[in-house]
Length: 377
Image (cartoon, rainbow, N blue to C red; front, top):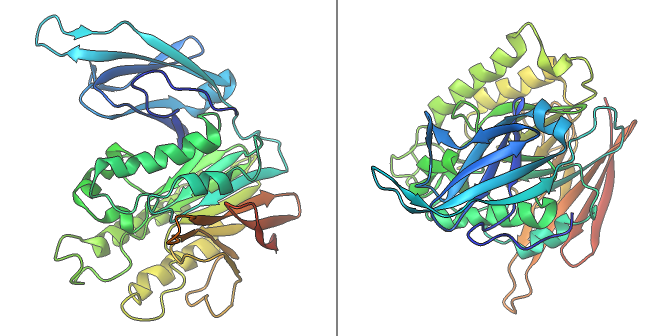
């Protein structure tokens, strides 16, 4: 995955997000444009009920996983919209750029995942840390608070810059929303810039032998907290999310037990099994129910968290487990802002092998901060 220059107007390489049984390919531009993606011999469009969208800076094209996995590549086609008149609109000639794509192989028993959270608009250092596997990562997970807030659309460029620097549009990405992402005027437009399923920021995914569920706690304090000034309703949001978890379990297909699934992941920005002191000691009943449902039914192999600005493994039954973890947890993502400008970032390289999970915490300066293993249940 060697970086190449993007064509004029295209800011970064595409981000190929895995959501459900689809890939949502997001492509950022610096001007109005109309966009389609060719996979094999089929064209997929960024349209609104048959109208090709141009009045957006980030385009989204949805492609069935099976189609892109089999094609192992795709081509982005775009035209700059010069003037969108009611009649005879004017656009530039079409430009094209192709990308290889490498899905997570179904039979692979050695899967490399890099986990990043809490970059808070930092991009250069997370890219340096995230290149731990070189050109051999199978999956990138961005686990919340990648922008520092949603007060400006430019902040979402951090998401695409990191994905570009690590994947160059060639491997799948899992994305979860963090609590800082819920702050600012563009928070209500968050799903225009990031993946979602039926406009929800929680969903399941299947990538080769991996099955996972992305959960979203919203904010980390009660809805009545003065910082939000009456602008959020996350308690109700979490109640709806609880019903979503139940619906995944109650579905007769039991997608997490489907043929070929050998590993199950929980991805969530806030460690909902650890909320023990004010003002963060919220939703004890709801979060305990999430933990119970996951522990008794889905039985994941590992939980992946951020939010805490630490690099640790939280074991089941440890002092950090206040609500009944359903598996050991990797908690990762440490941004360090230094006055001399030499910032540093620490993330986590997660290697799934047949009998265990190897975790390496590494920083953007090339240092290994720690190594631990997690045994499968």
